[in-house]
Image 1: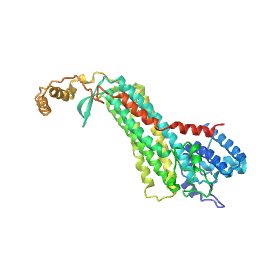
Image 2: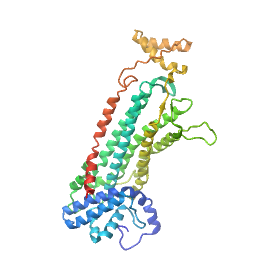
Image 3: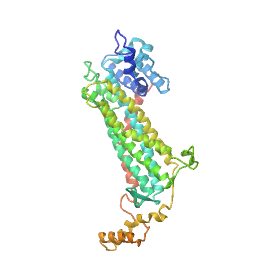
Image 4: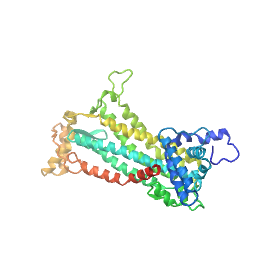
Length: 444
């Protein structure tokens, strides 16, 4: 079944090539499609295009279909082009010709747009929750291990004393900035394109403000042409936010892989969380972190991939846009898996005490010695030169006491301040409005 088909059949090769994986990808959008239709049909009744009785019948059956989707009892049948066609086909089969009226005043173009916005904002909500869970785990580890020192590196050379408190806390604060990116993506997603039809509006007196409220969107996409131009742009902005989260995870994964190696041996994991070698019986490989690093590097390429798929497209809808689902939807699944696995692994991490007692880390404290001389009245450049000469001549004596007190340093992690920043960003999403609106639409 094709909503646009007249009296002729499409060539089978053309159909196979153009539909591609769309049925598979559209299953992600099934719940959102029903939610959009629940709101759209209530609006149609309000402007006289459906009777109250027709609306009741449609609403009841759509809610049944929504439950079937939730229960995993929904498929897009062979020969049916997409999720929109499947829902309308099921509705018409069950309630008769009344089901054919639900498409009045909309096009598949704005239908898929609203489906995507509903779906993507839900995914952002779930990603944000995953980020918050990892954030709190990192903050807890930062506090727990705040006094355990760790070598800091620049250019892969030992540089200055760090700590596990700083290390864990750095990734927590990185997630705050990533959450800001997700917030921006959510604000773009949380605008209603429904009613833009094929990109040029409708001669029906549609009440777009009504559907905006019913679906819990914060605002309308007002200009109908721009609403269609948002396809691809919305996905790219979300991909950029996902890329930011992925960059944090990839760096965390690299650190874990490095610190777990025998040359560092700063951390360890239970043997059941690592993998072995088919030839070397001593191996405990960090495969989880390595797979995570690889997946997150692929996600960091996603914004460019989407940009290349949409570059130089003029305004209006183009079938190229269908392919965006195939790169974005699996990436969302991968990112959420990586966030969950990062938290799971960190729940089982062990850190090593007394790392800096090894003589090879004595030079880490050279800056501490310089600073103590400066505090006693020696000009910094003279103190720097004196300690540099002592190191070259073998006269350097490490003083391994650390007294860092400024904001964000070893002795003052500012954990509460960082948590307050994250809480402030998270509260700005306002997920409750979206969740309440969707719950109201499907309520009996």
